[in-house]
Length: 65
Image (cartoon, rainbow, N blue to C red; front, side):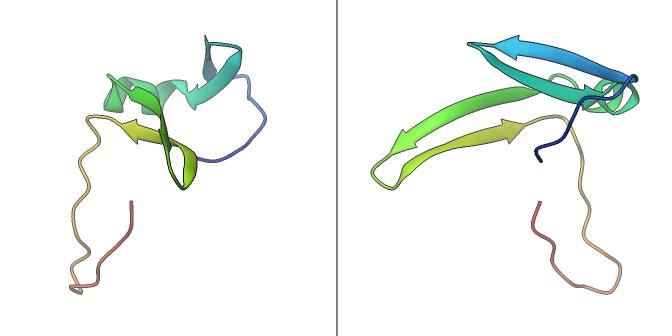
């Protein structure tokens, strides 16, 4: 997830006054997408989950997704 300006080929969603943009082709391959706002003692954050399948690199390195 990143802050960015929407582009012509993006789908735009508005939830509680906050707009989210995602590339149309990416949206087709990862939907459904769930975005939650979580509040805790350390502050608030967004949590994103989807059907995106991430595999580990062949070299055995780990990634943070």
